Amino acid sequence: MLMSGVSLQFPITPNTDSHLSAINWDNLPFGKIFSDHMFVMEYADGAWQQGEILPFGPIAMHPAMSAIHYGQSIFEGMKAYRNDHNEVVLFRPELNARRFSESAARMCMPEIPEELFLAAVKQLVAQDAGWVTNKPGYALYIRPFMFATDEFVGIKPSDTYKFVIITSPVGAYYAEPVRVKIEEHYTRAAVGGVGRAKAAGNYGASLYPAKQAQQEGFHQLVWTDAKTHTFIEESGTMNIMFVINNTLITPSEDADTILRGTTKRTVLEVAASLGIPIEERPVTVAEIIEAAKNGTLQDVFGAGTAATIAPIAIIGYRDEKLTLPALETREISLKIKDFLDNIKSGAQPDTQHWIQKVC
Ligand code: COI
Image (cartoon, rainbow, N blue to C red; front, side, top):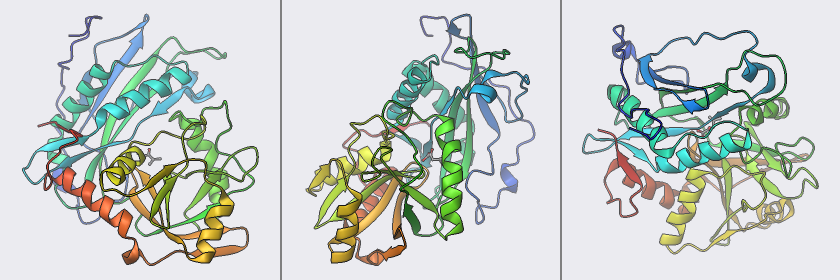
């Protein structure tokens, strides 16, 4: 029970029409299939009300609901895994809870106490534990999100909100090594903007520039700073990391334009523990292009919850397409990926205490 009187044991209305047995685990498109239940909690009268677990289904909305007019809407991405000991586990979920609160604060939305956020995620995942497979490369993707629900056409922070969690069994987000293009005109985030928040609008604004790149055969963009377009920030749905002369390099998060990635943070911590030199600092487009051309760029990969560690095969820059080293030569990212996979599967002891058991 929280101080506000909200119980952390959420009432459950079971789904009596489960479609789990109909899932084709060999053909699982990312984010299109949803498990049987969802968590729903309302914010009203200045407090979070009692949350509950309901059968997965549509949410009714008023046409004047403020989130759809003014974009007060944030989300998180997390994953649950089934390990070799048949336990369902979460990976560093407290980092997602914290980032969710930071996003909420930036968007003038109510924060959710970490204890409440984690209890909701864990109880929902436990309820749908049957949806968590131990198939390598697969997980139950968890999507917590919050949106403004005031029925009012006028700009002000909403007084009411809905917090919902849905889950979706998934395989790889990118089916193949990613082709990215360095963007020098459009901007994802400017200093002082909302780039650090996981705000829905950041993704909406990225669609048009990304579509242009997709028409040229790329999957995603590499965003550069809004002012000069000479510093690398992040790539589409993930943070971006480079290996030059055996050093792992990634843009620092000092500016409020870059999402603070859980996977990226973990990659840096693993690299440090493996004795790999790391540099978290401003990264210029020029140095990456030069390193790609002179052969010192050994690896480029994206790091994200959905994407996990996604090797980048090609970087487009102006009229050039720079092909990066063969995947099997990318020792550092392969080593880090193995390390993380082994912790998640339970093959390696979780000495860092990153794993939280659900059931
Ligand atoms: C995630 O990595 O979980 C994300 O939120 C990216 C998403 C747009 C699929």
